[in-house]
Image 1: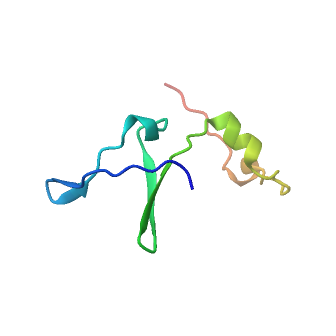
Image 2: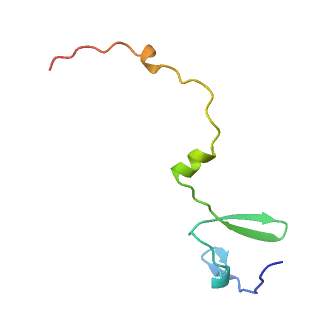
Image 3: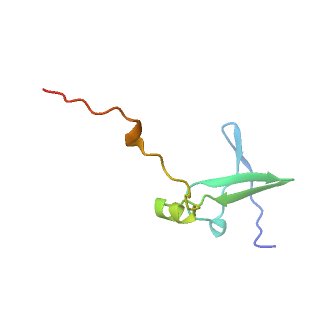
Length: 79
């Protein structure tokens, strides 16, 4: 098991809260919280930019429909 430290639980409005000690600090300002039995687990949210996301997705095998075929022909508008 990793590091361990006792911390106090306090009230913050209607919520209960704990302060995260500096030695347990992680990057970012958002976390995913989940409960497993009696444990509460916090994990930092991994933010990905568009290029990282595009690299992770599966290739698209289907053809896109030709949208020009479905459109009405343009009308000449004289202003």
